[in-house]
Length: 319
Image (cartoon, rainbow, N blue to C red; front, side, top):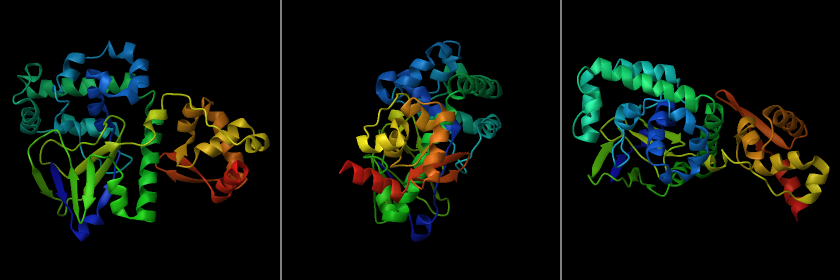
C-alpha cells in the first residue's frame, strides 16, 4: 500500500503531465506479456515485425517477472508537452550511482547485460529506447497523444464540475482518496507513506497500465493511471445514431456528434470511425460552425466536444 499525504496547499499543486519516456518504459510490459494488455493488442500486432529488429535483450532486461521497471524509465513530466528528446538526454546524463541504484531496487542487483561500464550501459538503454520509439511509437504517437490529452481535459472537467475528490476516486479502482490521503493498492507489499510536502503531485495518464502504478522508490510523488478511450484507439467504431439525425446531417456527421460526449481530437475520431483525418476535419468544422460542437486547443491538438445544442438535437431526435 502506498499513501500520499496532501495538505490543503498540496491539493492546489496537483497537476497533469504526459511523458513519452514513461510510455516507452511501460510498453515493455506489454511486449513481455501481451496477454495482460488486451487493449493494446492492436498496437502489438501492428508493431510485431518492427520489434523483431530491436535490441530486445536490453529492453526485456529492464523489466522483472512482476512487471516492475526501474524508476529512471518513469520520470516525472514537467507538463503535458514533455519531449522525448529531452527525457532521453536527461537519462543519458544520469549519475552512475542513480542508474545502478534504480536497477538494484527492482532486480536486487545490476542485470548482467548492464554490468561493467555504466556509460556504455546507459548508451545501450537510450539507443534501444530510441529504436523502440522510432519504429513502434512515432507512427502512432499523434493518435496516442490525442487520447492522453483528451483524458486530461476530461479530468479537468471533473474537477471543475465535481471537485478534486471525485476526479481522484475516478482514476482507477486501485486508487482512492479521502481527507487528504491518496491510497494506492500496489503489488509491492511494503507499506509506504509519503508526505507530498512542497513537491506537488503529478498525475500521468498512460496507455500501458491497467490499474495504476507509482514509482518503485521514493522519488517525487507521481501516479500513473490508465487513460480513458484507449480501447477504441485501434479498432474502427460504429456509433449507433438516431435515424432522423443521420438523415439530416449524414451518417458520418451524426456519428461524430454522437461520439463527442467526451473531448476527442480529429486524429482519434478518424481512427475510431474509420474516416480519413482530412474528411473528419471538414465534418467537424461544419458541425462547429452550426453550433453543434465546441472546440479548444490543448497542447498541439484541437479537442472537440458536443455543445448543449448538439446534445439537445440528439436527445430530442432520439426521443
